[in-house]
Image (cartoon, rainbow, N blue to C red; front, side):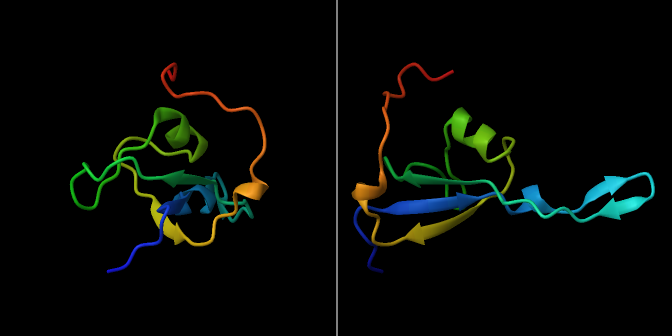
Length: 92
């Protein structure tokens, strides 16, 4: 299996855009699914699992044990990235 380098994933929470229950039934809501992009530091999680930072889980509206969908991203252009960045040592 050939993997692209750098290995980058787009992560989705497919359950975040599902129908919402109401007293009169359920309504379908057209919501953009939360997504994040991430890379791989190391392959140390058990098969079928991934370790994500708490801030990414919050952005994806995931709880521990929830399922997410990972899609390999090809041709990531660094020219599209701008902003000020911080290290993750101070993450809550």
